[in-house]
Image (cartoon, rainbow, N blue to C red; front, side, top):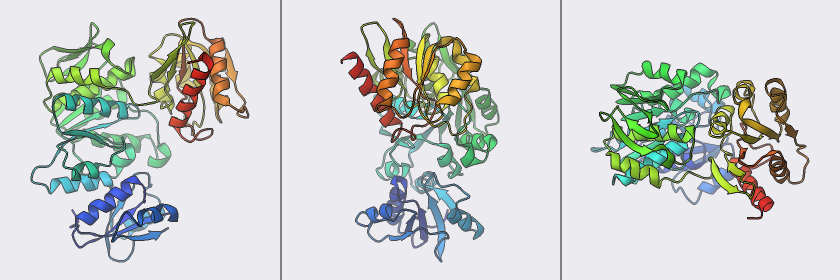
Length: 455
């Protein structure tokens, strides 16, 4: 590791992780320069970071730079990072910085890490809840919002770390005590350069002492089999074999860290449905790898409350139609998982697909669709797929020029639904064509539902 005290370190990016990295580097005695393409973001740091040099728009590291700490979204091909690599200057991320700083401690914290295309935040939240039930000094950090260096400097003893593929790419040394890979589907391929590179970034999570993977995903199984971990543990929605966690007779069962122990009834897990159960199994496996007892697993999962916009029940109307907000389902893989939680769905979908294919999603889930209401820029792409694979499903394609498109969408969905159906917002696409972000989209859905049914 580059000796930080007295060294000149460049922080690329003035967002949340950039600020935290700069603060950690200052505390370690480094000379810190922060750059960003936005002068406004840099100006916001002037009163927060004393002793830091702020320079807008750098395209190459300043003279004397010995290390670059980049924000996770910066691509390796960006001019500044490419120039650093050409000059032989190491480029790492904030997570890698936290790992290296932890290694210098006499008693470093335990890292329990989670990644996957979907379900990361729910899983890390469940894990944090289980750890708290066990009395551990634990915190969820990483991609969930709290930078890892902040959790480290706060002295937390157990880190429940959510890691994106970007963070893992910039964290080559990280070897969590236990790491779980939830699932893999095409995502961020433009950033990584292809599916193989994306998968290999995710596989970094499986290089610690205990590697945990979802056995119902062939890509995950392949990476788990190649893991160098001391112990490899699988979890499945089916009945588990020896060395696995799974589901039997309506219970989560541990056959990996116990002989054959029922842990919690599936009916008590939130969010309900296969995605929530899979996330609970992964969180349980991570907690059990740390030595958490079964009582804490049960208490933690029962206490867990899903984050907003993740398969949240908004309301049930007088016709027994339930309205579910899963605005966080921002890609087809997530939308498939959301759809599979229900038998008869009026599906509200659409937005920015960013080149993702919807063919397999529509083909595999067409049988559960009562109807579909499509919004957003790429609504016609989904409409065409429905015409090919589900020609009998009623489809409403809404004009984005509507003054209040979400209210129009919810009203159209209610008209298509029958008693006992689910109106499900699971867009399978990003939101920025019509909304600020997925949370804004989810809030619009919830407001429209409440306005429509008068609650």
